[in-house]
Image (cartoon, rainbow, N blue to C red; front, side):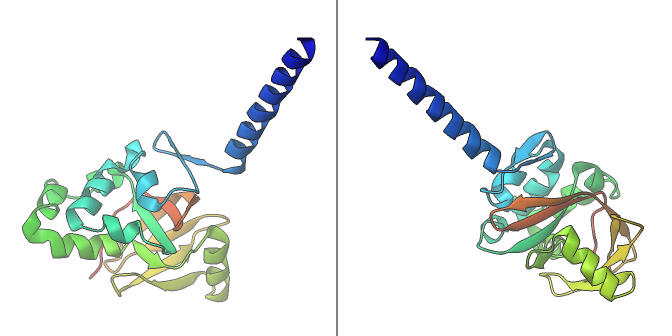
Length: 187
């Protein structure tokens, strides 16, 4: 009987250790009060962030959910709810109307770059470009990255607006998310 109890205890310890190791191997980042899991795609993770409810609603209204759940890889510069709140009153409500789907899609795809650009990749581009570099967004228009000191990269849109990256390299199954404080606008 003692052998059976010891075996059960050992098995229990092994299973709990294996479970802990599996959880720890998934390095997560907290965004909007939720853990972002590298095993989930961009949309699956964004749905859990309290700071990105406006972005998620806009992605749904634009019909981009399937695209952002695709294989990728994508780099998404994800504006927070506070970033959307900086837009003139009524802008978001107007953009999510069905008749404005094309404009909304253009704005949202301006926040996405094909490929996976982590901070170290952006820093290499900045070094090569002497402090500035151009990325081509999924909507086809350029977006500029600017060096603003050590480990501080900013984005400049086609209208001259500047966005700061507050959280870098949130790993996703199909790319990476960088959290930004301003909605980027294409031409």
